[in-house]
Image 1 (cartoon, rainbow, N blue to C red):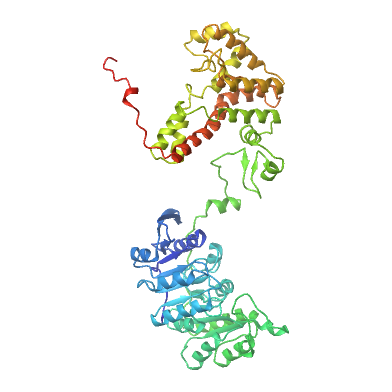
Image 2: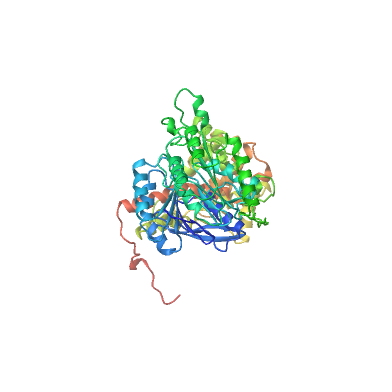
Length: 610
């Protein structure tokens, strides 16, 4: 066991199994104490590499993340403290690996319930190699104004209240981390404050004992008074009794062993810690307090008497000139995190994203206010979900059925269309699913599948202005614009698109009004008089029928209808539908194990005349 001071203002640590809050608290304490360098040199997350962004005062810093303990120790040879936040299952292996690194001198094991056999092995290794264990089941330790482990001493407000940003004259050791916080407050009230405090942990076999640390604190010149807080259970306090009897401790020791109330119970009482259970009279709080007092420690008659006893002992040391009380300093102001400042109502900040279609903050996600469980219980279909997420309302079933029909009928149109062709070529090049899908989707536009919105826009404008088919078509021709939704490379007057027929049949049977579709049919009649392939295609059919859906369901204002068309909702239907087919083509090529595609020479016109 080390015989003197464990930490200093230059101490740096490696933090195992990253937890944001305790690391940030360490860095905030560093800044409060006026340290020049952060106390966290690096983070060890097995299998991960990179960095974590954290704050050091107002400055944002990048703390390195290492994938192995050995790698972290090699990268940070001056970091001699290992703060282990591993679970009780893996605490032994990670701690032993750290101990075997020559740079590591102190390990704090935070986890509770580490198997006793594992703890004993760690203790034996530490003793042989002159290394220090704090824990298991510990919050850690602190040297005021210099260094702290993890969550030791709690919040920044508590640290400032306890004046831990500068060193005092009192050394403190306890089994309990929670009670340590209470005693730090006591020391700030009745003394010039803490110099160093250690919580050895509440497990049955602590890595270091109360007496280990009292003897060490006794060797630190700046410490003039030692306070010890034990608890019933175990016999750790008796090693301190022997040290006192043998005169190994030259400084005043004030001690109290908690758990005197256990005598009031008829049966054995298990307190919070695994080791806080009396196994006989010698392990009772009363027996320990008596032994400590007989050995020379100052022991009050109750816990309530501990604070007055500390005050009296400190004042006597001041009167005797042993202690020159520490001069107060004003600590720097540590910037508050925006999230906590907002929560406490100190500041307000604008949001960066606005979402009106879903909310995942409650017990279950909602789509436009409809709970996920309701969607399942009421047997909502894809069309119903689209109506919630796209249109922010529950449309009638005939509307959502039409949406689903559009998706079903537009899912694929064979391997020869540009989108499917691109996806097939990309898949055969060995690319991933997303790349294959995107390569196909990027072909969607005015010439392939992207004419639904334009068809709706032009058909609506012409019908609302009561243009005859002749006026509409000829005005478009005069502008040099092809009529969106009219014309097909394969389909014609005598070979109609079955998809168009199915959608028209459904709409005539279920829609209250199909005026826009009928207008599109009249336009088709006129264009067929010009050429047999100028038929109403699926883009024009969906575009005109969606106008009828929006206008006849009485759930949208005219402004909303115009906005839906302008934004591109209707093309969204084609994109969603065709994604199904493009994914299918990707899987089909992989299943068939098709080789890299190369276009045949004979299908290319090599010309020098163009």
